[in-house]
Figure 1: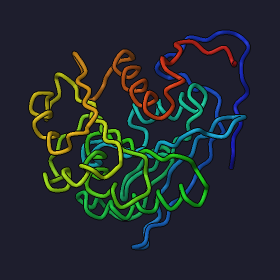
Figure 2: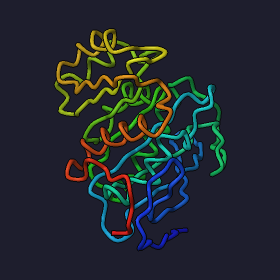
Figure 3: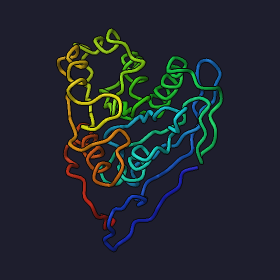
Length: 248
């Protein structure tokens, strides 16, 4: 069911849990190997979206799910602040307050079917200019399988490069798909100097090293930086993102 949230006339500071107006719809995705995934689509209230985020969440075996905070905040804020559609879903076997997706963890292999189901949904709904926005494990799925789909590009938040091979990464070179790597200075797995070497196989990578950033992007300062980097690619006219909301 679509849910409309009314606008407010009084300026409101945008905080960690702020939910801005959007049309939110609980959705299901159906994979080609027979698994049903649960998710949510968030759309701008009164305008068509200018671009679409397909959010790929962190590692399920370490607590990643569709509500992992950066992805949830993208859904709560960006339809209103940047006219973006945000599609989030639980990978197979993952539970969130929205529900539990069928199947079980696929080690970054079976999740290719989950991504394919999401992209079919994007096509069926006519959602414009899709971008994959992966975080940690989600970046692996984006690198490995993103080129199979009609996307504008992929934004990789804290890419660990554990499962994606050098060959899979190198395939992005010359693909015509934009690749943006957002790497925290203090990442637990892959820090900027090493990441630059790894991503050199894709010379056109837009590489962003975030000073004092950490893998989990904890805190409003880091979250805001990440959301601004996303919007700078999908709807540059909307940056910098405002820090208050007046219902305009």
